[in-house]
Amino acid sequence: MPPRFLLKLYGRLAGASALVLLLCLLVFNGLNSVRHQFWLERFPEPLMRWLAAAPAPEEQYHWLTPMYGLRTLSPEELDLSPVERERLDYGQVVAVESAVGYRLMSQTHNDRILQVRFQDPYRAVVRATALIVRWHLDTASLEDQDRVASELAGRLGVSITPLSESHQLPGSDVLQAVADQGLVLFRSDSHEFENALIRLSDGTLVNLAFPAPFSPWGWPVVTLLVVLVGGVLAVALFLAVRETDNSLRQVESVAVRIARGEMGARVEAGKSTLVGRLAAAFNGMAEHIQRLVQVQREMIHAVSHELRTPVARIRFGVQMIEDCEDQQMLKKQLDGIDGDIQELDELIDEILTYARLEQGGPVFSLRETSVTDIIRQVVSEQQVLRPNLTISSDIDEASERWTLSDIEPRYIHRAIQNLVGNAGRYASSQVWVRCRIDEDNCRVDVEDDGPGIPEEDWEKVFTAFARLDDSRTRTSGGYGLGLSIVRRILYWHGGQAFVSRSDTLGGARFSLVWPRKKPQDSIL
Image (cartoon, rainbow, N blue to C red; front, side):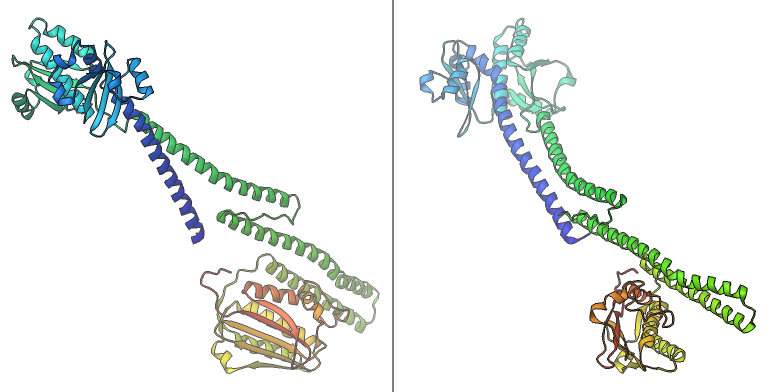
C-alpha cells in the first residue's frame, strides 16, 4: 500500500475520530448541564415543599438554620431574575449556583421565599430529610408513629422502614456510628440507593432509602452518544463509499463501452489513490487490448496478402507438373514447390512468434548468460551463411568483465540474429556488431555499409509487415516481421530497440539496449 494513501487514510480516520470525540464532549457536557440543573431542582423538591408548607419552618426546624442557612425572605430581599421570579410564582423550586454551593428557593404559602444553601446538594438533602423524619417520629406518640412515617414517606419521597429483624441490620461499623451520632449515611449493597439510618429516642432503628444520586452516564446520555457516534460513522462511511462507488461506476461504464466496441474509451483517474491505481491499470489493460485488436486486424490483412504469392506459385507449379514431360523441368518445378512450402513454413513461424510476443510475451525464464558468447555465436553462424560479406564483432575488455546478464538466451539470440541477417541483406561488403556492457546496461549495435534508412522511416521499420520499398522481394528475403519481433523481445526484457545512421560504415545502425540485471521486484 502506498505510504501517501496510508497517511491520507490515517488522516481521515484521525479527523473523523477527533470530530466524533468533540461532538460527544459537546453533547455530553451540554446535555448533562441541563440534566444536572433539572435534577438539582427535582430531587430537593419534596423537602423544599415540606419546609415551605410549614407555618414557621425557621422556628419548627431551627437546627437547620445553622446547618443549611434556612431562611424565609421577601422577594425584594433576593436578587432574582424575572424568569426566576416567574418560576417561583408558578410554585417551582429554583436552584441557583453560588460561590459556596447552591441556593435552593421555593415560595411559601404567604408569598415569601424559603431559601436554603447546600454545598453538596445530594448529601445535604438526605441528611436534612433524615433529621426532619427523626424529629417528627420522636415527637409522635407510639400509636401515631406508623401513620406519621407513612405520611412523611409519601410527602418527602423516601422509603421509611423500621429495622426490627437482625438480618435487616447493616454492618457493625454503621451500627456503631449511629449509636454515637444518632444518624449515619451509608450506601446499600445494591448501590442503587443512598441510605440514612436514624436512631429514635426510644432506641428504635429506622432506615431511610433515597433515590440514587445524579449520574452523568444515565441511559438517555449513553443512548444519545451511541446514536451520535453511529450517525457520524455512518455519514463518514457513506461519503467514503460514495466516492469509491462513483469511481467504480466510471470504470464499469468504460468497460461496457469497450464491450460495445469503443476501444478508445478510457477511465479518467480521480483523486482517490486506490481508484486512481485501478483506473491506471484498467487504462493500461484497455490500451493493450486495443493494440492487440489492431495488431490482429493488421495481421489478418497482411497474412492474407503474404500467403497469396506462395500459394499462387504452388498452384501454378502443380498445373505445370500436370503438363510437364521433361524430367529436368519436372524436377525444377518440384524444387520450386518445395521452396514455396519452406517459405510458407518460415512465414507461419514468423507470424506465430510475433503473435506470441504481441499477446503478452512468452513465459520468459531469465537466467544469467554471457551476452558476448551469444554475439560471437551469431556472428559465426551468419558468416557461414554469407561468405561474400565480412561480418565482424567488436567487444572490448570492459564488456567482457560485465558480460553476464539476466536474459532469455534463445530470444536475445533471435533478436541479434534478425538484426545481423537484416544487415547482411543490404550490406555491400561489411557488417559490424559492436557490444558495450557496463554494470547497469547492455548495448548491442549492428551496423552495415548499405544504403541505410531515411530518417523519416526510422520508426516505420519496426511496424509489422512494413516494407520501405519494392526492392525487398522474396529474393532479398524478409516478411516485414523481423524488426517487429526484435522490438517486442527487447520490450519484454525491459529495454528498447531503435535505428539510426552508422557514422563508421555509412549505412544503417540498429541498436539494442536493456538492463543488465533485472530488478528484484520485476516479474516478466
